[in-house]
Every structure is written in structure tokens, then in C-alpha cells.
Length: 345
Image (tube, rainbow, N blue to C red; front, side, top):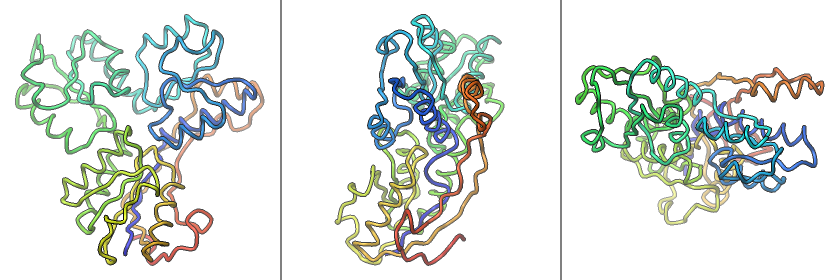
């Protein structure tokens, strides 16, 4: 068996920043219960590890006691949630991904300019709920081209489309093309809304999946970008499976011992889970690992402003350190003694 281990995979800068926020808040406030509004990122293991450290995840700002510390998740929140947290005297720290914040800002700006906003995304996803909340009277959600005939349009010359950052580029392209056919003068956002990490991971799978018999995506089922990776693989003609970790592997997927398997991970999946999958396949099937570098990512984000202020007040020297994700590498400490046959491409 050959494993093609693709780069980029796993954590993006926004996820790394959000996780780092919770880590730092736990260190800054020892002994206090830290609350997080929604899952900090959509990964079962990340959330479970924080729960093990005493973090409490809530679905309402009414849940934490007055005066508590509340971290907003990476997916963004509607302004009404932010206001209610302030009214309740909660000490909020916003871990929203800056690329999601960018879409929020676009929604606010276009609504003020009198545009109707057609937001392409999954209606019940927390990111879409947060973006819609910035301009609820101006925004309609478009999940599929079938939604277009049911839209209420005041002026077809004052329309703009925005997109959820974690969509499949394939699916988004189909909807955007349909919107342009229906409304030829619809305006596009000034820059791509689907985030760099989503685009890069999808492009890498699209490029390498045709070489493979199976694609394994490490990620949780409520992770939009992880699910989209399986769809991209299947669009390329290769079966794909979404697994949380090595316990999700099934023997019947690997009936032929000479299979070529692409291994990738959604943007919220930790690298140790990828390593665990590879170790299991090496142990059970004698797999060899080939690393394939498609993109190098160098995006970095700052910590939230109020968290930086707290850190500076307490004399932390790295308050202004920017958060970035290093290229994942196969190391013996993480992957074990695995047969690595090709480094890069």
C-alpha cells in the first residue's frame, strides 16, 4: 500500500489562532471556568481535549454566570450575540477567524450601500448565521441553484453575492454561475471569500485524487471544509471516506494490498490524528508514505486585541506574536518509525 500524504493539510492559521486563544485564556486565568460559545472549531477531538481541561461549551450567552469569561468561536457570531454578552457583563474574547470577519465587513458595507446580499452557504451553519446577522434585512441565503427562483429581488442591478468561507469551490462555482445567468449585473466581492486554506486543500485533493484508489479525509462530520474535501475527491472520480481518527478505518476499504491512498485532513483536524491514521495503515498493511507538497502556506494572524492587552498588562513578552501554521512534517516522535519513501515532489 502507498500512502500519499498531501501538504497542505490540517490546521489553517484561523483554526490555530482560535485554539491558541483558548490555550492562552486557560493559562491566564487558572482556576476560573472558561466558557466558549459554540465549539471553538468543528473537531470532536479538539473540543474533547478542551473539555478535559475544564472548558465549558455553551450554545447560549445566557448560560455562563454574570462576569464569566466567554470566548467566541472561530466561526463568527451575529452582533446581537455580542450585544447580549456585553449586557450580561460577560468578559468576551473574540476568536473569530479574520477571514470570516472580512465577510462580515463586506456584508455591512454592501448593506449600507443599498445592495441586497445573496449569501451562498449552508443556512444553519454558524458562520452563515453570524454573517446574516450583520445585515438581516438585506441578506438572503442561497444553498443551491434551486433557491434562486424563490428569491425576493428589489433591484437586479443592486445585488452582490458573498460566500461562506468553507464551501466547496466546485459547488460555489455552480451557484455563482447560476446567479450570474439569473442576474447578469450581480456584483462579486472584491476578493475571494472562500478562504485560502479551504481552496488550497481542495485543489490539492482535486489534483492528486485521480492517482489514488481511495481518499481518506481526517476530520469531524460537522466540519464543513472536511466534508467538502470528500466531495471534491468524489467529483474527481475517487471514493472518499471521512474519519475522525484511526478508529474509523475499516478493513474492507483496503481489499487490495497494493492500493494507493491519499491522506489529507480538514482545516480543524490536529496533525496527531493524521499521524495515528498513517501509523495504523503502516502497521496493518505495511504501507509506505510519500509526501506530496502542492502549496506552501505562509498566512499568519494576530491574537484578538483585548487578549493582547490582557497579556501585555501581565507582562507576557509574546503578546504581539503572530499565529501561523508550520508545514506539517513526518517525524518519528509523531508518526513513529514509518517507511518514508519520498520527501516532497
